[in-house]
Amino acid sequence: MKIWLDGELVDESAAKISVFDHGLLYGDGVFEGIRFYNRRVFRLEEHIKRLFESARAIVLEIPWTHEEVCKFVVETVAANGLDDGYIRLVVTRGSGGLGLNPYLCKRASMFIIASTISLYPQEHYENGLSVITCATRRPAPAALMPQVKSLNYLNNIMAKVEAIQANALEAVMLNEQGYVAECTGDNIFILREGVLYTPLVSDGALDGVTRRVILELADQLGVPKVEKSLTRYDLYIADEFFLTGTAAEVIPVVAYDRRVIGEGKPGEITKRFIAAFKELASTTGTPID
Image 1: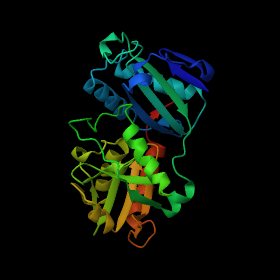
Image 2 (image 1 turned 180 degrees about the horizontal axis):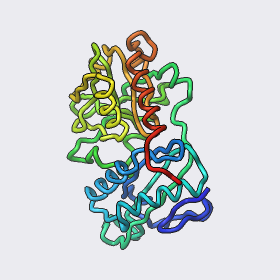
Image 3 (image 1 turned 60 degrees about the vertical axis):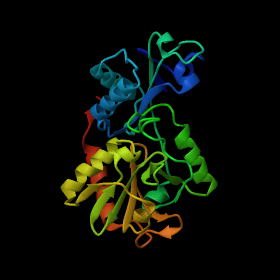
Image 4 (image 1 turned 135 degrees about the horizontal axis):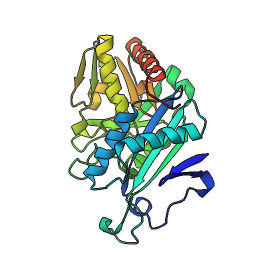
């Protein structure tokens, strides 16, 4: 495997960062997960735009331009000879010794991995997931802005631990007010009486790229859409329920907190969204060749 690291493609065994890197020591950095299908990188421009916005929000200067980073991503995928897969792009504050002061880091570091990923077993895409509510809450926006896709993922990891310990693959996270935010790595959508609902970004949800795609597809499919604060009750009584994310793509939910959603199988409108997403993702994007 070839890894892009600070300006050059290197073998996986040579892809190393300093033990004094602030990304490792303090979770000080930002990242993006990006998909590619049929040798096309899906929504590359949107992902890199969000990367730069996240970096700006935490006062992290990326020493390459938007266009250069897009080029590096394509080069990395091409170097690994993959047709379909997943990209992890990470920007750290760089090496700055011990201590929190980010201004001691002279230059940001960036690496790009192009590989494959399988977030959930295939049978759950066909039959649906069972999810729970976890006790771990999403941080308040005043503490850690949910729009920033930072390396501080311990909150999500602790929620994932709860899910696994409860024999579930995913967990719904609430904010401190009790409203639904997102899952540990996915955005949430429900359908009720033919209307598509998703939590507000301001309630703690990441402004996911796949989330945006689903909202676009809703218009094409003629499904009314509403972004609003949702409670567990709204999810309990949903006719259909699905999750979205770059790694997860679109996956149905058929049970929540041991309550059956709809008829206990992926809903018909959910299936339409899955089909529309697959068609769009497999036919559009930035060419690798």
